[in-house]
Length: 89
Image 1 (cartoon, rainbow, N blue to C red):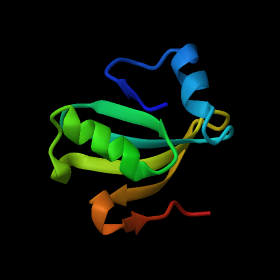
Image 2: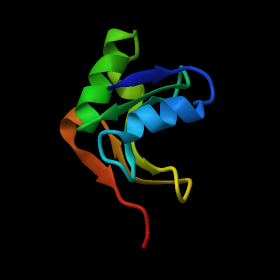
Image 3: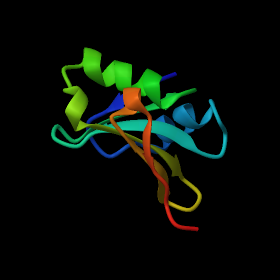
Image 4: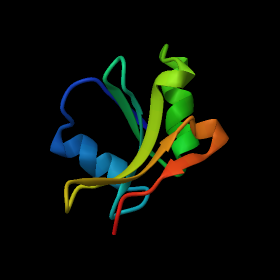
């Protein structure tokens, strides 16, 4: 289930978004509006929810977030074009 988060996520919301991948959450972030969509199988699904919610494509970045390490990695800008910036190992 994809959730749109406008405030800090609750533990219940994090648990719900973790149901898809269990160890990390696919998210899309509108960096201008400071809104996150998370919980999809693919970043694209989260991106589409943000676009429906009024976000502009140029402001959306995708990433994977691990609640256990509190780290974000594999940033994707312009999700539809699949530009990727990987985090250093």
